[in-house]
Image 1: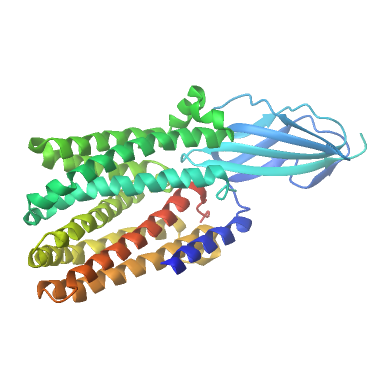
Image 2: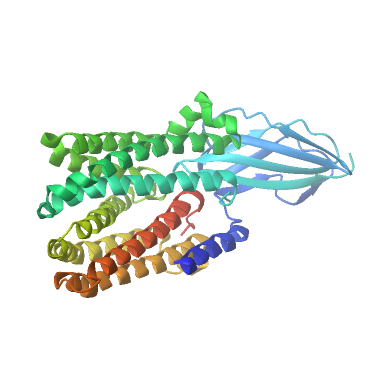
Length: 118
Length: 292
């Protein structure tokens, strides 16, 4: 019995790093992109409709960092959503999002991009 | 991506696990009474409080699951009691599943409380509870009618099997009840020899249709967790086989320690079932089915 519990825990723990696949199709800017100017918007695109419920953006520039909650224009089911956060110039932006899939599952994900030259 | 090992992922899985265990216990003990009436009123009456408590726990866990979903959506404890977010959580599959399960559990409670409506309330309640799990998550994918039908049958069979363990355990505890327990366990074993292969066939077909083949079993995280579940299923089948061919015949002969050994085997069987339900709770709350 103990071995079964350990095996189950091992499978779950081993699973975590491999869970890079979500039902997210792509983001704008794409994950890992370096831009010369801040974008006007960020966008999330899904392979199946989803309700985007929460988006947070962490801005880091040197030692200074600031987290902001991004306004979401609709909680309706969307294939794609465009957001207009308050950008803070050059630096690294880490975006974390949460959404409700059409099958009722909660989806989470993140992407980041860097702005240089502002 | 998933938050499987975060507080929200663990809370979602824990609430789903509680729903599984409590629902199957409630439904199963009542189905056992219908399926094996020769077990007698004594064991049925002894387990009536268990069925009632399990039903109430299942109702509470079903409501808590919705609250956890709301909190998980907002990554915020306040989300759990935010009416707007709870309403959004209830729109769509989780809401449908919740309403149908609560309706089914209400019937199960009626069946446990009122003898005149026991048979129809048990049957309709059991079907509604089993079907509620097909209304959300992976079973909602196409072809939904096939996946939903398979999972409903699969869970009805699981509930009958799991729900039989407590009555069988209890039967062996009555003074001088070894031969009666052996007779009922033998009858249950004969029923299981028909039900279990169908249960496995339904589960296997569900997984094959959902994954779109065999390869995703080892090529995806979902598939690897499913393999872990299948290993546990093979263990519980082994224990069931030992019961049928070793412990129950020994019980029928009233051999020394036969009842104690059978009860110990039932405890192990229950333990492995709990592990299977745990794996399933994680699979159905935090893992994405690979796109075939």
